[in-house]
Amino acid sequence: SYELTQPSSESVSPGQTARITCSGDVLAKKYGRWLRQKPGQAPVLVIFKDTERPSGIPERFSGSSSGTTVTLTISGAQFEDEADYYCYSAADDNLIFGGGTKLTVL
Amino acid sequence: EVQLVESGGGLVKPGGSLRLSCEASGFTISNAWMHWVRQAPGKGLEWVGRFDSETRDGTTDYAAAVKGRFSISRDDSKNTVYLQINGLKAEDTAVYYCTTMWTGLDYWGQGTPLTVSA
Image 1 (cartoon, rainbow over the protein chains, first blue to last red):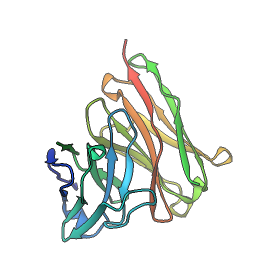
Image 2: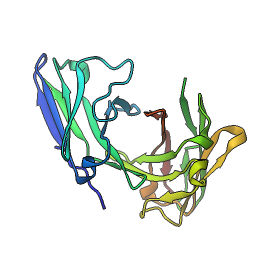
Image 3: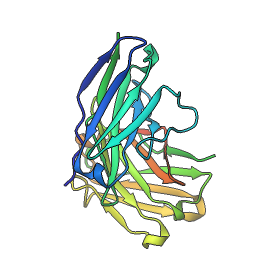
């Protein structure tokens, strides 16, 4: 079965660039997506199809892909970006999720 | 505008049954794959199951952890997908979300919480 691996935590200073990686064999043939989830709230899609940003998501959020790894980049991180971030993909028509990365902005 | 609204969660005793609903608007569910995902307290996201679009014969599939107890169905007249859960266990306590991919974009509902406790 497929797996997606991401770091459990990352930290970034305000105004600096945060990068969260997600690795898994499935990403070599399927798109990666990223969700942002703040405490007590539903997940919000911030990146789809590896690099696309939904309307309403700030331009500081970007995605990239290389081989079996996708990366979420937050350029000029703000305090409001502190949240859990999950990568996920569709494998064999099912959804698989990374374990989530807690991003701390301090 | 695409929207997904889940409902039906609550407090249920172990061994009981419950049906969760996901009402869709802005698209026709029979043309889309509909997934259910859950999140236990303090844990990550876990795929539960899916209902295929009509082009894929409307088949279903489930995660191994829930197969046999969970069942997904669809009412096209109400544009609503359901998640039937039988034999509820404490470990089914979670927020349940429905999600779909429509015209290349993923959409998520706000979730409905389920607590299984005596």
